[in-house]
Image (cartoon, rainbow, N blue to C red; front, side):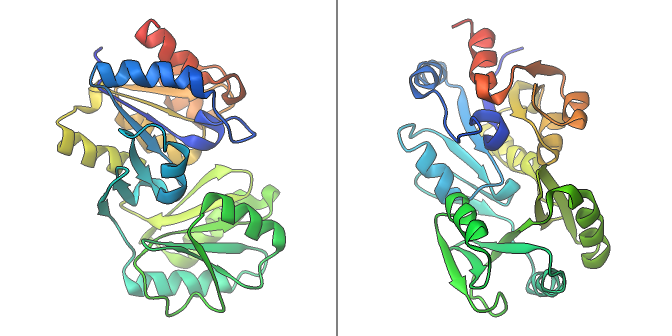
Length: 264
C-alpha cells in the first residue's frame, strides 16, 4: 500500500496527556514525508488557530479542524461547513436549557463563551480555542457557526449525548472524544468529509491515506481511509473499527507507527 496522506487526531492521539509531542522525532518523519510528497494533516475537533500554532514550524501541514467543519492550510481556509441560522438558534436554546453543561460556540472568526462559566472551564476553553470572546449571550453573534463544544459531567456523557440528539434532532450529529467532552456538529460533517474534500483537491485516493484516532469523533475517518490505526488508549469501538493498532499516546504511538511504516 502506497501512503500519500497521513491524518492524525490530536488529543489522546498525536499529543501526550501533557499536550506535547516529540518535536525532533516528528521533524525527522515530517522531513521524510515532504521529501516523498506525502501530505500531513492535523484532523481535530480543535480550533484552526490552535492547530496552526501547534504546527507553526511545519509549514506544509494541512488542517481538518472543528471535527471537519473547517479545512485549510497555514495561509488560507479552503472551505467551511456552517450551521444554518435556524439550527444554530435551536441548538443554543437547547444548550441553554441544560444547567449542568457549559458551552463554547465555535465560529469562523472566533469562539464564544458565556461570561458566567466556571474559571476552570474558561481556562480549558482558552487553551483549545485561543481565538475566544466572552459574551453575555450566544444569540445574535455575527459569525458563521461551525460547531458547539459542550462540557458535561464525565460520568453522564452518554446520557447527555442521547438527550442532545433527542432535543435538537436529525440536523446535527453528536460526537464525543470522551471524558465529558461532546461536540455538536452538522449531521453531514465529520473528519471523513474533510478528508474527502482533500482527496478530491489533491487527487489522493482514500486507499492511499493513513489515519490515527482514539475517540468516537474519529470513527468515520478511520473507516474512510485505507489504513486506519487505533491508539492503544483508544475506546473499544475505535479499536474494533481500525484495521491496525499502535502503542499509546504517551509513548508517541503515532510517531512509532509512522517510523515502522516508512522504515525510518
